[in-house]
Length: 198
Length: 156
Image 1 (cartoon, helix red, strand yellow):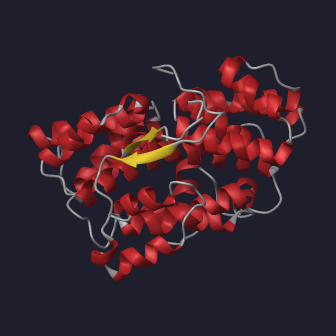
Image 2 (image 1 turned 135 degrees about the horizontal axis):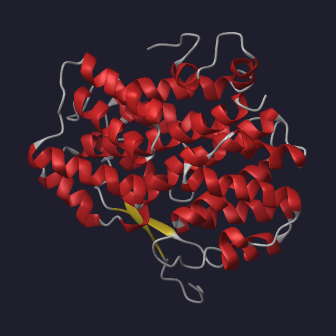
């Protein structure tokens, strides 16, 4: 966390690109095809239009994202969201953290969890299963080379199956990817709306 | 496009065909399919858009080095050597690309619009800038998936 992160719970953020988005009128067939499948996301317009400069990568990444975040069974969706909020919090990606904190709270109706992560980051006091997820997501985000066989034990002790651990790994890894695109091809901005607390 | 079995991720994680972990991965067939699809699209695209194949392998090797993922670094080194180019990232353009690789990998929160402008000024096209960003982000993804698979492999 190289610089303080803005509040990611209250208010909503927009995203402004630093590279001119693709002009849809000038898009090739391949670019149009790649834009069809898009991860659900409030900034989908500008973000996808920037990524469409490389349609081959976009065409694979969108269905990969959906398979990782929405694939049936395995790790409950809320716990995938928990993993990606921890990753986004550590990487300092306020945009991703705000979108996925909101999803987590919608799924769990437990707003205190995201409030604790906002306030205390990786030191947030959570119930044991969530804490095991936070600790693994944190270590995998910060230093994947430090992960060893022993790091599976706390997850297994909380009842996570191998498929659930794989799902969590995929979700954290997907946001090692997503955060970096969001943070280096543009920036989160605060919409100029009356009453926005940010 | 390769959809072979084992795929790149299996090979890098040392998962034998038919092993329990290779089978676990295949409980997520769309993840397996589009991981390999992303690898193909990022390293062997039909249109490179201005970022050459050797530049791609060298940039990926740098990411793996920064993450201290020795097996992954060797993988990209082998692919770069196979292309017959030892130092594709040189001169002002190469230095600019390497600086961006370092920033996106190690301190993405510190990136600014000036970093993108510098790449464009170093003659990268918008396509090449997005390809480079996808590549660096993908190798960061790949190294973390591998770390999880190696963890499960050592503990199953």
